[in-house]
Image 1 (cartoon, rainbow, N blue to C red):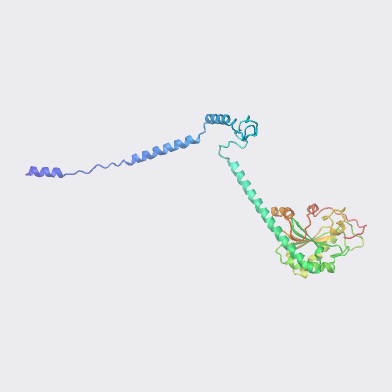
Image 2 (image 1 turned 120 degrees about the vertical axis):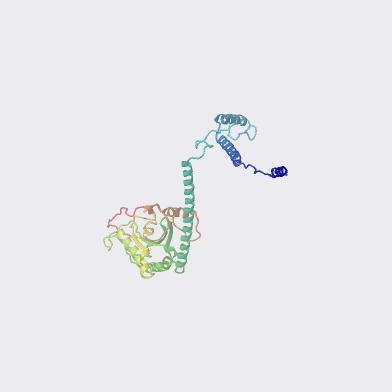
Length: 329
């Protein structure tokens, strides 16, 4: 009895299965094997067999030297008769095309792209500014039309901005005088409200022709006369049209910035003038483009004068103070 019970107990006795705690090593080893194979392939792909490449180039030359023709007897892609000259696939002066670009090349290309974008931006700004100036020209022309004074004003677009020229030949100022004539006052009163409504600074520049002043005048020389005329216009704008004094500047240039050379028949009358400069608020790069843009884009308003080269002369250019000859100033 006891023996049977012992056998039954032995028969039903169970033991725990042994657990393998190192099975992860198999998966880990498999992963390392795959990674190693990947790196070997990548490394092999990154190496250029110079010998095989030279053989490929030679075979390519031989294969294309007789087959690079458009039609028999005509020039092929290398512009040589009958394909006598093989296609040139030598490394260019810019470096090996299969080599990665250097840091200097990347920086140079980025700078070129930036300069191109900046130039396009400057050109667009200059075009928009010229369009604004031409709208101002139309407004001034319309304001002068009722009294028929359109011919007393000229227009130029320079690197300084819009220049409204007041021809001083007895319309604005009498000979050797800085007092504004009645017709000149009418012109200034028509222009003043338009210029006063602009945000731009206004520079008033006085000019004379090259004739020296008479010794009997109250002005020392053409510099003194041109400055007094500019001041007369500024005073009118401030006293009558209430233009802010901080936006106004007056300067006299004498005869140093003529519109026309002395040999031109227009010199005596055209060079004695007062210019009202609507100053450009743009950067120097945009300002430099204004004359070129104005020349290349036709205007649908009043005619504009070309910018004379003499306007780039220095403000301190030498001047003649001889006082023995009389004439219009």
